Length: 322
Image 1 (cartoon, rainbow, N blue to C red):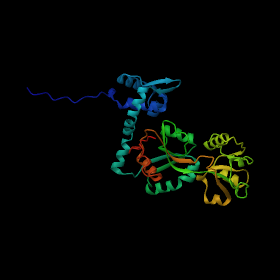
Image 2 (image 1 turned 90 degrees about the vertical axis):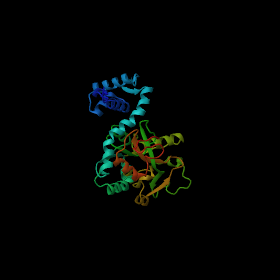
Image 3 (image 1 turned 30 degrees about the vertical axis):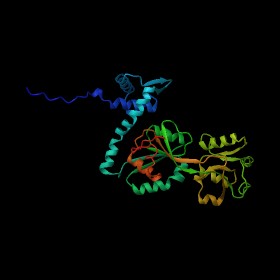
Image 4 (image 1 turned 90 degrees about the horizontal axis):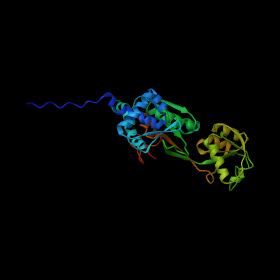
């Protein structure tokens, strides 16, 4: 009697593990079932059913509601760390495959950055990127720091370039450049050539600062408060170029980051280092933790710093751990 052939295993459509894992990862990342549903182009009940099926399948509770936000249980956090690179890798498989077969010759790249980064830091990098990859459509999104992080979290951009003081748990920041804090004044100002410049020497003069919501203003206020030195704000205005112009006109003095000072500025302004009192500012690349970086994004980061996402725990796919 001849042996019957062994039947190939059958996988029911409802038994597909990838869909509930993708729903779980999006919910964990966004902290909301409704936002996960929007990201996946599904209805909210469909995502809820997938999450419930995953919890039943694994026999444990993965998510819990904290007010209006969904948080992970201890078991949910363990699963998220295991599932996230798998889901991200599969979602990025098409782009990786096209790169292997056709090379890096097309596609899109979206980068978020603030005005100062776009104006002073990125021009040479963008020029080199366009020279090497003329067919890639590059979009620079000019946003504030908070706006850039929101674009990262919603996957509207591939990466962000800028300065960060506090790094949220869901993001990774790789600092590359560092710039000193500088006092700028008109060239004939009393502080322009003062020896042994102290923080107290700034008190009699009004400061021209960016709006209070921005990091620079908060940092200036913190340093003066910590040193118990009074200060006055003569004017709040956005943009380093505007601030430099108003300082040159004699409307006040300012504290800026050296990134914004050009040779032309040094001809009309006096610049003094305040590194004794203020920390230097780092600028670098921000990515969503676990994000699969496209070939276009990795090509861009290579121009900022080679192997930026292949050291200190960054893997070859662009996934990063600080």
